[in-house]
Image (cartoon, rainbow, N blue to C red; front, side, top):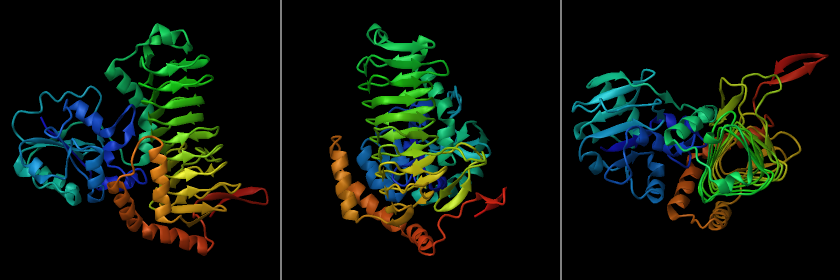
Length: 446
């Protein structure tokens, strides 16, 4: 059986997280979205079985990151029957596909929208990065359609608010729940032991607390947990990640090779990112190669407990939630003591410096924040040199394909950047609803 993961136009609604990665690479629970779909259909790895159709700007980077997957390959699509799945679709729990493959093509719907299809090469060969939405729409009138269940990832905050449930679900699927006597001798465990999995190669120092009362905890291979760290479930700590006197308060996913300290709650940190020092990070999604300076903190709740709005492409979008933190693109850095406002979105390769006040909610890619306002960013070559240094410290290489991706993104995001800088020049700043006091009474203002 073969599987092709595809991106529709909804990938744009997941920026800044999807500026530098395909939708199927976004983390949710203990795996990425693509892995969840592959697991649901029991499709193993390898170019004979796995393919993707992604935005053309990401194609070369995708080939570099995963050379064992066919990328935007019409020849591969034409070789036979294939499952075509929208990578924003998350299959339902206990999904059983055994009765779906009787030889005839079909289309599965989730909440009335096309989610996944089983088709032959006569349909699959028409798949193209720029027309995935049209491909699914055309298929609806030609094959059997039925509801297949599951859920959608529409916006970045969906990943954060669904994360706790998926950490629990992934733990149950993996059926882990194992801890060695060596680890038991060095930790304080609160809650059921069967909800705790610590890989045998992980190092857990004395004076650490694991609390599984509200959900399971996984500590992956090579992880290091230093003394005076407290971890509450549900939580997933990725391979080779290090925790330094951290307080993880539940609903947290930490990816591969991160350095985490301070207080973290209901947050996803993708991989290779640092929050070594004190500071609060809550209801947030942090991309790769991000460095949060000491005491960097974000707000995740408005003072009036109202709905949080997040700038997507510079325009405020209602989240429907009262608790929303920040969303940070890859290779972005914050300075000592930076304070991020509720519902902040910061693009890729940004430099954010503190100003003694809450910083702008919208920071376009490749800009800086100086004295509390969005400002032109560093020279691209300087940004690339920094990326090479940062990645080299973890044994990774800033590839030619990644360099070209960021050059293309610089051109793609220039209008958003110009609009933001023009607002600063006009001294209009961010246009966000706030409470303005008038003679003891509060009223809405801008």
